[in-house]
Amino acid sequence: MSAMSRKWRTVLTGAVPLMAVALATPACAQDVEEPGIVLGASYITDILTVADGGVRRGTAWLGRADLTVAIDGRAIGLDGIAVFADLLATQPTDFSGRIVGDGQTVSNVQADSAIRPFEAWIEAQASEATAVKAGLIDLNTEFDIQSTGALFLHSSHGIGPDFSQSGANGPSIFPSSSTAIVVRHTRGKVRLRAGLFDGIAGSVADPRRSAIRFPGSRGALLVAEIEHRIGRSGEVQLGAWRYTDRFDALDPTRPRVVSQGAYALIEGPLGRGIDGWVRVGVADDRTNPIGLYLGGGIAHGPPHSRIGVAVAHARLGMPARRSLIDGHVADRAETALELTWARRVVEGVVVQPAVQYVINPGWNPATLNALVIGARLRFALAID
Image (cartoon, rainbow, N blue to C red; front, top):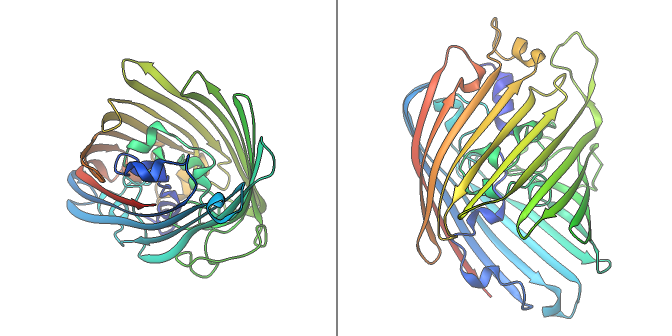
């Protein structure tokens, strides 16, 4: 695949919301009713193998470790204030690029090797209905959250690839974040969010390094979302995003263009212990490779034992189809199917076998459909 497609794989690696380790997290880490200081540590590792197809057969060990501290301001005499920090370490393995050949990335913990501050923010309750957060912020903890999708390994079920592909280094998501200001307003069942993120995640020279800049110093990413709760646990999300800077068009004969897109999601209980969701997203395909994404799935079972099936379908725009593979027109769509089962074996430990089947990996007609098998292990510890 071309060097350009390698860049796309880099920014398509989706975020891993902290809710993704909820099955493994001890109860004290989830108790937000009492004021205090909570120290946390978690490690997620994927051991995956391409059993058939792909670029070649092979096995990889990927991992993400987080050390966190969460402070409720009441513990230090500051009512209405919350502070959070996350130090992130990642293991280097380009499993999707070198072995699977897919573009969406089959593991949401895949990243280059680095140790860096990932989040460091302070949140203030401006009023009973409005909160303001500022600092290094993981965009995917505020916007485009697929709660049911957090069960799955595939990156597109964390944040849609139509969004995660955007920007010079990707938006402010795992593994590179940027400074931001986020305002959240709640009224009844409706919650409005608006965010101003710096336009470049991480350092301009090296995205593996964190950078502290005033949001908007390198252009800005503007995000807005409206969320409407349905019943006890269902919701509808409508969101839109836009960069203030212009980007090179995929067609070199065209002028620079604005990168922008929108998404919609609906999720909630379907009955008999089953939850489901559907998400659709679009992006300007003049500068973004993926013009349309459709994904979703279902999960069943109690919190300590969940089984689920999901699909991620990403369609290239015509400019990307013409430029992705030298001398050839790329396939229109890449589709990934996933079946997984997460089981908490002891407090703080979750074992999760998974099978994925990737159709048209990397949108490359020369790459065989890939069968990926393996397991995820999650470890979590919290002290308050």
